[in-house]
Structure formats: C-alpha cells, structure tokens
Length: 549
Image 1 (cartoon, rainbow, N blue to C red):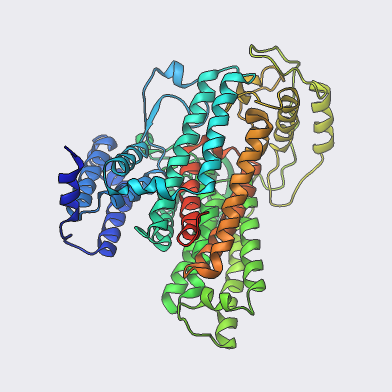
Image 2: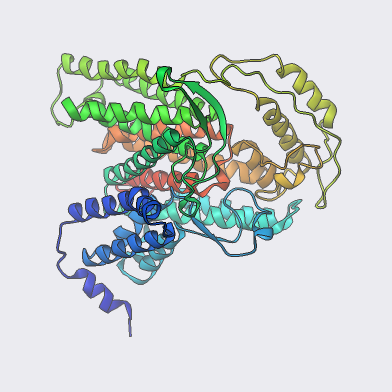
C-alpha cells in the first residue's frame, strides 16, 4: 500500500487561495513573525523566545497545509530560517566548543524545513527532482565526496571536524538541488525566490537598525543574536557617538554574515528600482541605501570591498547594455522598446543613488585608516596529524610580511587585520605544498595554528586558500568549477528569460559575494552558505527550464 496516496489526494484537493496569494501570506507570516513578533512578545512578557518561535512555526505549518502548499511552505521556511543562526546543541559545550563556525553536533532552525522538504520530495510527486539534476549538482556531489576522502586520507588533526564540514557541504548540495528543481519546474518563479530573499534581508536589516540604536544586542541568542562587541565609533552630530560592531547583525549570528547577505541583495534592489516608477522606485532606492548603511555598521571591510565590486559590476552592466534590448527589459516591465529619454531617466536614478551610497559606505569611523597591525608569531609547538612546520620560512617569513605591511594604510578602511590574514594565507599555501592531494581535512586549519605560532586558533580567513589547504588541489578545482559554472549558466540564461534583468543583478551579487569570500570564510557558516546555494540553485534552475545544465 502506498502511504503517500492519501496525503497526495489531500494536496490535490482545491486550495482555498491561489498559489500567488498563499506564497505572499506564508512569506509575510514567517518573516514578520520570526523577526519582529517573537522577539517583541518575548521582551514584553519575559517568556523564552523559543516558545514564541514554536508558536509562530506551528501557525505557519497549519497555514501551509491548509493552503495545500506544504512543499512551497517548506521551501519558504528553508530560505527564511537559513538567515537565522538559531540552534540547539546536541552535545556538551566542552565538545561543541572544539569546532569553529556552524560546525559540530547542533540542530539548526533551518534544518527543520530542510528535513521536511526532503521528506516531501521522497514521498510525494516531487520525486521528479532527481530526474532533472544538472551537471552542477554532479560536480557538487563529487566535491562533497572528495571532502570525505580528504577527511579520511588527508593530514587531518580532527576527523570529526572534517566530517562535519562534509555534512554541511552535503546540506548545501540539497539546498541547491531543491531550489534548482523548484524554479526549473516552475513551482516557484525565480522572481518569487528573489523577493523572498530580499524581504528576509530587509527584515534582518531593520532589526539591525534597532541593535545599532540600542548599541548592543537584545539578548535573544536563542533566535540567532551573537555577541555584541563594539569595534569602532562614529559621531552623528547632536545625536552623539554610536558604536559599530558585531551587534549590528540581525539574527544572522554575526555582523559579517549579515554583510554577506546585503552584498547579494543590493544589486537586486537596484535592478528592481530602475524598473519601477514614482514612489515604488524611491522606496526601493531608499531601502538600498539603508542596507548599505547597515553594511557599514557591521564593520567588515571585506563586506565593503565585496559591495564595491558589486556596485561596479552593476554600473558596468548597465553601461554595457545601454544600447541593447536587454537594457529595455532591465529598466521597463513593458515588452515594448522604450524611448531614449526613459533610458536616461532610469540610468540617472542609479547615478543619483551612487553618491548617497558612497557616503553611507565610506562614512568615517574611529578605526578608519588604521594601518596593518604587527602580529607577533612564535615558533610552533607542533600538532598531531602530520604536516605543517613552517616550510615557507616559519616565523622569519611572517616577520618579513609584518615589516612590509606595517606602514601600509588605505583611506576609510581599517586594515589592522591584514597582516595576520596574509600570514594565514602563507601558512595555507605551505600546508597545501606539503599535502597537495587530500589537504589537511575540511575546517582543520584552526588545529594547525599552534604549529605556525599564531596567537589565536582562528580559521583561515579566505574561502579559496582554505579550500586549497584543506581539500587539496582536486577539491579546490572542483569548487572553482562549480562557482564558475553557476556564473556561466546564469549568464547564458539572461537573454532568453523574462527575468533577465534580475539575473543580471544576481550575477553582480554573486561576483561581489565571491570577492567578499576571498577575505572571509563563509564555507563554515550556515547563515551565509545556505542562502548563497539557494540563490545559486534558483539561477541554474532558470537555465535548466529549457536545457539541462
């Protein structure tokens, strides 16, 4: 007997609302409920915020079933909750504290709708997901498999950490596949996924405004608030001094995570703004500037650099496409060609936004212009697991790096951590040279820091150097090919999609995010990786609607 039949018959019954209306209601209920209602009720009543999260989640689940949209509901919940660093430890603090980032035995809020989505795929009509798989997913599966081999055969200090990294990458593959399938099969439109992402980032940014005004977190760590550490100060005239720091993060767990999401969202809101007229355009551009200001408050110069790359890409794309029919589709929702005057007006709005964005992005703080700090590196003490030892010169090489960087400064930027990051990159290359095939295992660089004499056990702050050192050359190549393939399929989908304008914005966001990743380590953070893979899957899904990618 097929137990899924009764449930499928229930889902096939007439729905009380249209697909579009149910999508909007479910999105608003979950975003508004988790971001504002649950925190407000918790602070007003003193009850644990987890109680209200469960209450809102239950109401949301009932609505999704009543609308006959459990699969769409699970996907909405997956993308929204992926930006909440809410988790429950599944082991002792002594054990979970051994892992960096979002690794280790923890149950994350986003994993609940992920499990629900997988269950609905396996036991309902959505089993067709497997038939439409793309080459990107095949490469992704190879990468996940290679990280497992790296954990077993590499110079791994902690195999459990490496396997937890593989597990996180496997979950990223599932997220990618779910959103590829959803857009490919037109269950949700690419535009709907984009609006859902933008709405969640805007809600997180709005809560971050409250954290900025409060000058600290609100103590809602259960929902994903991190530590509130003031890193720099600004003066706002008669309003006095305010701090920038890790508290300006929404519920993403840390300010740098919110910054990475804003890098992805800004080009999308810009593209949407130039397509609108009147008040809608002004609101979208205002929200764009607000997100840029919030990114400034996160204090991440890697995020600012990524956003600068994004904005340059958007401007270049608009200029290069100015005399093409694609430009018409970007600046107008009409299928008819637009006049030269309308083109100039639309382009002018972007130009008008640039100075305000620059003011927000480069607003001076107390740490602006800081030089690279000198980081003292001692001789290594050794680790178990093999490899390491400072083959590129050890502390003497690090001293040379410090001496060459300590006089360097960049106006409006704080590069105090540049020296330690370059030292990390040198150590990463050294580990790669010693272990070129399997590397040292995913997320294992932190366990080699003592051998290289680093003062703190920090992860390698570059996605690319980390992949090279931890997954070896094959793993690094696979990841690069996956990322390039996503950009390539997105580019190929632009001219034949009705959402070509949004695809242009999405690709600009991807490029900026990948630039951000050069100076950061998003691969071990669920709140940055899940949204990225969801948007990447949706992008490939647009191309796969007509071809197998």
